[in-house]
Length: 575
Image (cartoon, rainbow, N blue to C red; front, side):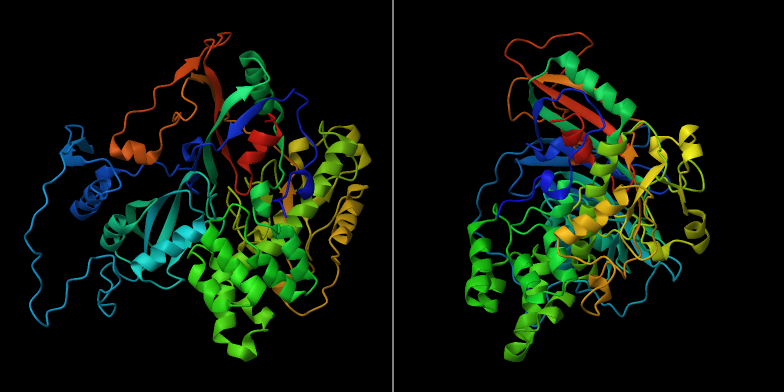
């Protein structure tokens, strides 16, 4: 089965009528750069070497000397302005030595490296009970957040509850986000850099609280659409200007629904219907682009029921699949058919994403109907708006218990964790005919519900779309055929999501380049290494590219949590 298309997940309308053009998104990881914006408004970007202590700087030097990197020599240099940089120059290869490595004396244990987890955990915490967490920036490349955290947990040899984040970031891209580690020293984290691949840690500080889902203002994106065709540079620039003015429909993007052989919303429908065995098989189905050994491991279970062979062949990043297999293995013959128990062994944030994918699918279907039937010029009678101000939450979702593990954006705060006063202040108001005629509410105030027990629905024809789309999946929105609250729409708190988003800070530029694989954007790791910015040629207004040049559009903008940047790039330009 092929991965889902936009039409499969309810994406069917555009906010703009501008003509489209062809282009390539995410050809290189550096074409999709994401930096988390903290609650204070700070963009988590560059790993600041100036704040590193000696051990942390040593870890950076050791990383730069890894065999997989060019032969480099690095020095730490302090400038007069107080900044600290690392300079690089070419290092010739070392001559091999025939001397044997000195072994430790008999009976003397080898000294553990600071990030190995072998340190005496009984030692008192040196930073006091008020600062129990070390917060740091994690830069990752071609890894989703759950896989990156799993790698870091194994490297540090710490428990699953040690690390916490505000949300998940997309796999295919280069992203920076905050992480907190409970009672883990900054020195251990810094030293771990030497052992990490496609991951770097930096900017360590001790804080009193752990990160929680939604503990961020949003994300800052730098997206490059390359190899543009089908439109002139002027038409591309006009489409970008229209996007900035009109905004885009706030769809849940394709990442929300996975790239596997069974899309996450269809797996979620199996869970809602209580079809546990089929849900396990859907999760184990994997994706068409997997490596042959991983595909063979999945077939070992799906075709022969061989749990041990499947575990041996699946990579550590397959968190949900390995949790299921481990549960089935530990249960022996008696537990080999305890499919519900295996599903409950999956970490909660991962397992409930399947039900949230169903909510997302229903929302997308409703958004397409609302845009098609009533337009996007303003609120109409029967629409829902949130009371409490123009933008009371400052987020794409409000009261949305959204825990996607596959989106390129981030989960907002869970509904139950919001203060009671805020939940009461953000009540949905049904727009009256008088208010609609007076154009009291703009289109950016309109919200649509994510199905749940505590939401109201629009008082026009869009409300019926939820019921129809759920029936298409064989799901009853009012009741579940089982008692598992995590796998029930009726038991979910639900929420509201804005129909339209306008990226007010969107900036763009047109680039011309010659090499199809040329890097067009500098990453934070490039800046840390002192790599020169990529040589690009920017086209000015009205300027035409050279005859043989390729054309790219580079967009920089900020989005609130759970707003999909790929919907801005793919659905609204459109590519």
